[in-house]
Length: 253
Image (cartoon, rainbow, N blue to C red):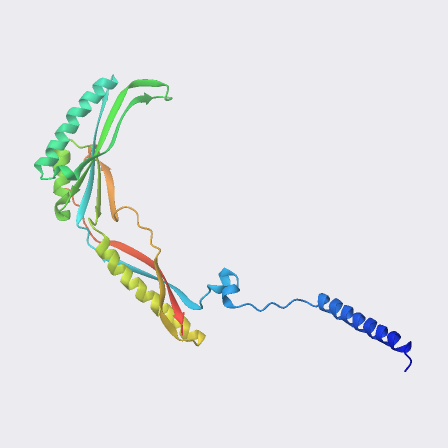
């Protein structure tokens, strides 16, 4: 081969190689990208997902109330605010004194409401005096004699507006019992779902009490003593219900 031919062939080979490289680069650029990542590199919501069986459980425990919550009120209507307030103070002192005579401790006596307002008549444009009122909350720890206490507060203490409610001084014991039953209920539901899905139920991963706990569970009724309350007053105690709802997450094994 002549010396002049070799450079030409070599240059042609280089050109071919460059063309192939450019073509491969174009093809690679047009291909969809495939990313392989370890679990730690996955999005947080995916990386932390753990398969499981999630179930809710409900339970109700009935208990006899151990405390009567009494709210007794007095009021006064006088031509002036000062006169109404003074008369109310006298009535409230009498009522509180009667509560103490019945054996109610000072820690179980508290004011739940107090007001002094104009008393409107007709089209609410005329004031015929001023009304003062006070509500006193009492805790009576013998629910079976709550009616006797109410009679004494009305007939000897001068109470007019009366509310009686029954509840639990400490509802946590009943709540704990209901919570245990609710968790057992959730486990029964989860086991049924696991059997239906053909998987084995594993250990508990999370338990959450989603019950709404407000004030001490209670029930009761109110009445106006001026309407003519019967004596002796009958106040059946009955039972109240403490309800608990839980959510339980079980692993799948």
